[in-house]
Length: 353
Image (cartoon, rainbow, N blue to C red; front, top):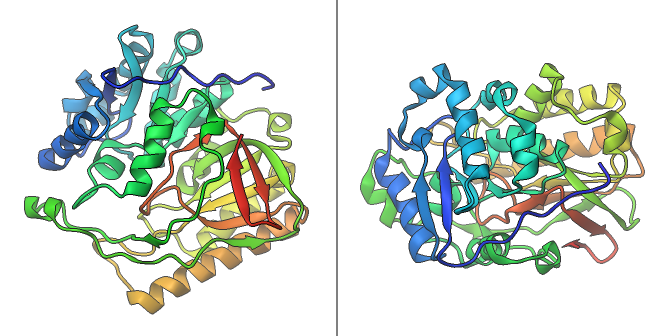
């Protein structure tokens, strides 16, 4: 892939499609979903247009992957739609990919926003040379409890409205972050702020060589499924000189799980092809498991060491940056998947070009 296109930017007042290509918790927690739509209108002055899947429950969507694919294609092809925003992630979005017509997407490049299981669609679009954005999901980034972080709003505005990716420029570190969850069952939690803690800053490992390249990747669990499926991966040589994006989800995979995933990439000869690695700050708790402040720190430390060791073994020339603001913690940057980024370890700088 030598040619990539950044789809046209949105303008305030534009219509954006709301689709559920993964699962759909909107039917379980409509108050959270409605808050996300409200934020699109009031914070960003965008008009959400609900496509059929946005109001179907997860059981129905599982049984109808072709309808999820059709919603995505219809949204891309609709001349009145300027962007496509996902409701939430899931775990089996890979099942819709065989129902997509790549020509419909290729001929109608549209800005696409979503994290987690939406890595499937981001990688599919990458194969078509279409840049997408790893962020902006309705029920997480947009329906953040209490209020949206100014940091997230700033970078989402760039992802929505900037013509060129160099508008992102240097992605500065956030001063505070959270991986706290408030129970969606209680509507009153939407007015409560999640627990914040000081962000320790990014950690740069490996050589101090400045590298740049187009990004590829996303959620580790979804990339693992992509590797197992082995039907929608780019050609090995298309990954040469790219920057690998990695982040883990609220499933809290162990350091050994992450290590085994990367060893698999290494043994396939893929890990050595990347020029550098950006790792999103790891979520270390969920509603059902919270090891406390010390335990969360240890969890992140173990994951960092696993990634650094495996990348260092298979690709010692690649700098690795940890605790970048994308993925399942907040605040977050909707990083461009397929966009060009420079990693400058000596100045501890990350910048999109």
